[in-house]
Length: 96
Image (cartoon, rainbow, N blue to C red):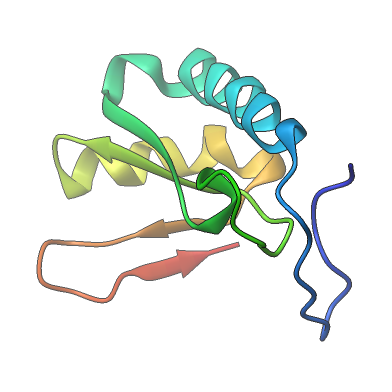
């Protein structure tokens, strides 16, 4: 099952086992790139919930110790992700 959607479209798909495997692969890639900064990494959003129809887009939350550490992690994470860096109490800055 392919992940992602064409720009301007929203479609829901039946739950798929590949989503969990795709998360595992991406979590390994993220850990290899920024592992020393990671406090926690989680598969979040509808693709993380078994049995729930979802947009085929992985949402991954990576916790780090500080805003400064988060900004260090942006460049190594850019190859296949959109990064949102948020200070506590803020809405975050999206960096594509």
